[in-house]
Amino acid sequence: MDSQPTPPWPLLRIRQAQGFWARFIGLMGRPDPRAAAARDAGNAGRTGGASALLIAHCTSVHTCFMRYALDIIYLDAQGRITRQALALAPWRCSRAGPGAAHVLELPAGAITGLQPGMQLQPWPIDAATASARFVRVAGPQGAASAPPAAPIATT
Image (tube, rainbow, N blue to C red; front, side, top):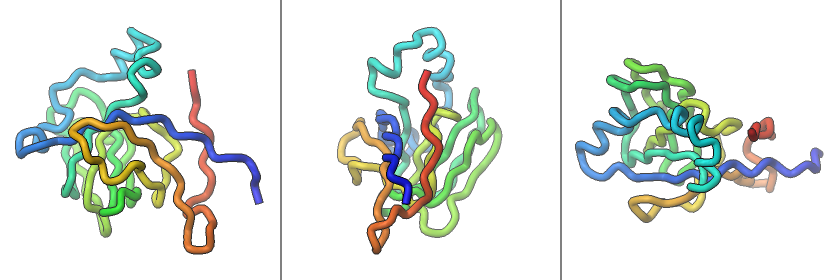
């Protein structure tokens, strides 16, 4: 058994889409946060990590009118990853599949090494804006539900 600890996934600043228009628009019209991070290399460290948008009770998304690709993470009712659509290019659509209940939208490449079965904690997200991170959850026999992922590259 591998005794190395799994890497801590970065803290996410999660904003919840409230109301029809916020859910429909999602991240449309927002500037590419990767460009802002390139201009200000210390931005993520000062503000607490990558930004994400949580769209509750949603099982499909589109990237129409987007200026950059998105990583789409589908979550079940308990906040566990059921599926991912990585680097979904502008003008594309994605469906969740069985078991999904919510969508988390992030800029492409904002967080790596996530796998189905990992859980967003704390869950549920109670505030309009909150901080959370993904963690591995133990299976029924105490084993990790997903194999170890590669460490996240830090710059």
